[in-house]
Image 1 (tube, helix red, strand yellow):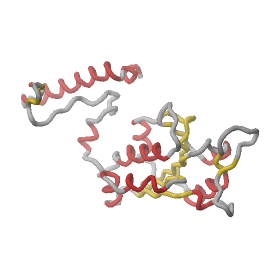
Image 2 (cartoon, rainbow, N blue to C red):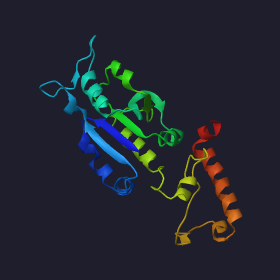
Image 3 (tube, rainbow, N blue to C red):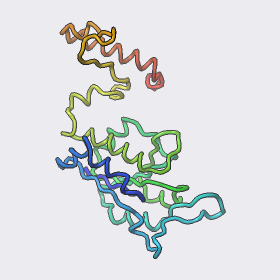
Image 4 (cartoon, one colour):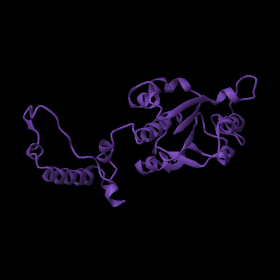
Length: 221
């Protein structure tokens, strides 16, 4: 898979791409991730990529030309272009599972007061990461890239993926490690029993219990 990220702030991705699971996946060529400064594509002699909105209003709006030209230089028949915007569908694990089957994703990070509406014409999908305001699309693009990368074959052990939160629309079960007792708090006896059926039953019941208490909306869905 290849992911191209369009942003005005490429340095924000330095740590993200050079640490932990993402770096290992890149080094093992399980994924290719490129960050593009779409300011490099502007035809304005002063490097301008935004302007005041027609009809008045506060802030600056990202212009069509730099983003259009950047996308055109990257797009091919396998590309899916995604705009990160509050107007989009709220991102979740099911979307991550669907997107990990794509060959090429182009993520467009907004900034300032938003996009010229016409930029939507070159996009295939619109994604929001939640009902709150961020300064730009850089953090959402990292979130989406991370959630997809870890699902790719060979990046993480498949057994670990199967037991994670949201895979069965339930939160993950509680886990413990040594010591057996810490400050009076004991590891549940069933986990020490060696009876895998009892352990699996316990974990499922804990998943349901935790989801009912913390995220009942998942059970409603």
